[in-house]
Length: 116
Figure 1 (tube, rainbow, N blue to C red):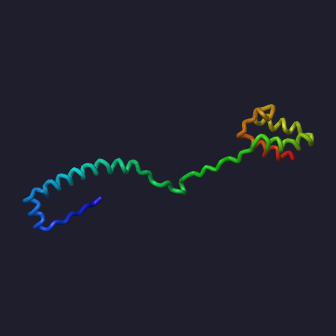
Figure 2 (figure 1 turned 135 degrees about the vertical axis):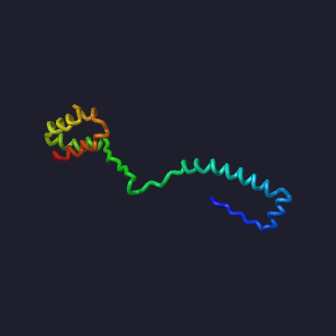
């Protein structure tokens, strides 16, 4: 911040005689001290805008519901592919659908699609 004060020689002489220039300068010095203390704190608080090229974009994994999994597995069961379904479950460390974590449903559907 830059503050410029301009006084004519007569204004300075009149202010010195009245004592107002000295009190003004003392107040100005105090304001300068306050600003010196505030400025570093304000700069620390400011966060630079993230660079869009460096900011990772979180793309959520597609999620599936248990009903979608069941709908995908039903034709396989009817088509006699019980062994393939068991193999899929075992790849997730499970023996039945309810033992598989919901976060893995989308992957399970993809695996089941290979047996259609």
